Length: 384
Picture 1 (cartoon, rainbow, N blue to C red):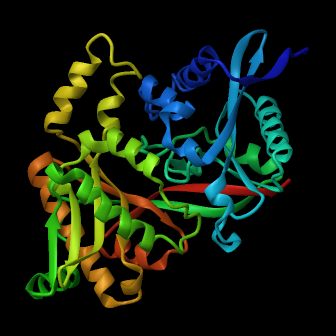
Picture 2 (picture 1 turned 90 degrees about the horizontal axis):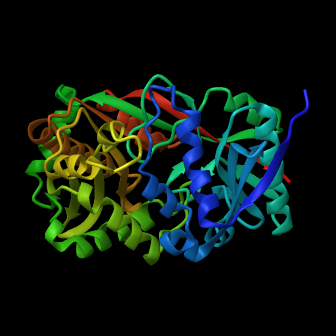
Picture 3 (picture 1 turned 45 degrees about the horizontal axis):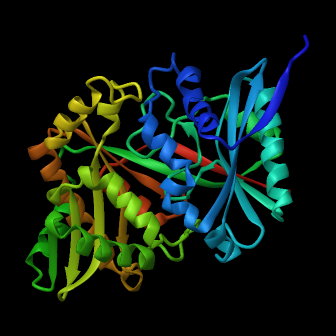
């Protein structure tokens, strides 16, 4: 059978729309896929709209067959990632690809080859993927948990992508995990005792954030984050342009009692961010705020009632990470949020992650509060 497959660069606004719209057709029969808002998806790939491009460059490609889009991919280089220590995953010569979707394996392989060619042209010697597009956005390929919809800021994928990537010569580099837990259940007695001891310690204060001081609170969290995560695999520091964009995007989902800051002797040393699962609301909108989607979403955001909360980020100051205090602060923040999630938002479950598979400290915290592994994502690598 003769195929008429072409791989084309995406450079115009019209091409970007085609790039963004393709997954809506590809996943239309997948009950677990959550259509993103089209406008947000467009902003994410538009340099003028995404602060990540202040230190990164990307080239998008679509595959067409007889004029019809049948696949897509991004190839990109993060200049900050190039400066990271190689033992932490990135480093000199390491580019990435992501946002990969395709109807068939031959299309997938043609797109991947074109992305690799682009990375070679830019001087890259190794490729990691999928990373879509920042490590802080949706890294990794879903390989476990296809029977659940992704929570906010997590990805979804077709099961066949895994063998396609591996047959293209890619090997697993890092596995990212998420854990789900029943938040209506009290934590084990040992955790309750640790929390009680922390609450009685005058040196420790765990508090809600104050959204009326959003910029100040965000700066506190960012300082702890960049310190706490600095030695983690895949770490790339967040920049001011990214922080502004993330703040604008997530501010409607910030609720004082769901974001915790822990202080030791008056100094902020830990934080935990919990978000209502916006995907529960987005799933019904099919990517559009028109004609009445904007009204439904605005009403939902006033006081969300959700089944699921997601904990995307938690951090403890690096100087405390090998101490008992680190776990104690984590348990205290989780318990405060658990109670608020149930009492104020009607939540029954939470998802913690992603967590690096070899991050034994964070895995231990998640498992001690009865978290159960529910999803796994893989980042693959290949020499170019």
